[in-house]
Image 1 (cartoon, rainbow, N blue to C red):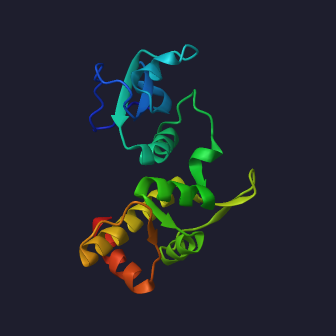
Image 2: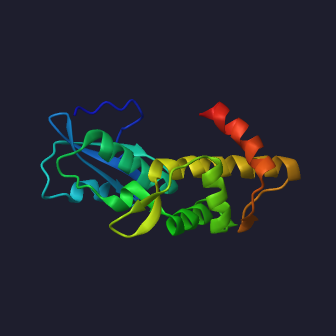
Length: 184
């Protein structure tokens, strides 16, 4: 499939150790989608892949897996393999990612409450025998929790970070859902 992203995909050679998703192209066709936290050295380390161009999309570390997965599924590069760990998040990975990226503490029961409230479908990954959600649903969950935190910060006039313990209630989730629906 021909590369068709409209975002800024320029290569800035002078910027090492940036985080981004990269596309290896051959004659304008995407042959591989990858990710790196180490800047430009990673895309050019693919000695076993034939390509004549590299495009990149900068992103936050917390979004890296989901964005890479999105483009792997979209372009189906001939050098990409189906990787189940990129397609889904276990509940433990969900909690760890939320805690790390949002600088909060959250219990699995609260995550499950929000998942149920948002009507996110849980699946069982037969290869690892665990309950998982898709990376797209993880991003939806994370963005919803950001709205809950933002609403609390406005209400309490203080930042919710440094391990802030997030426990949710239904009234708060309904209020956040109104904002979430308007942004989607």
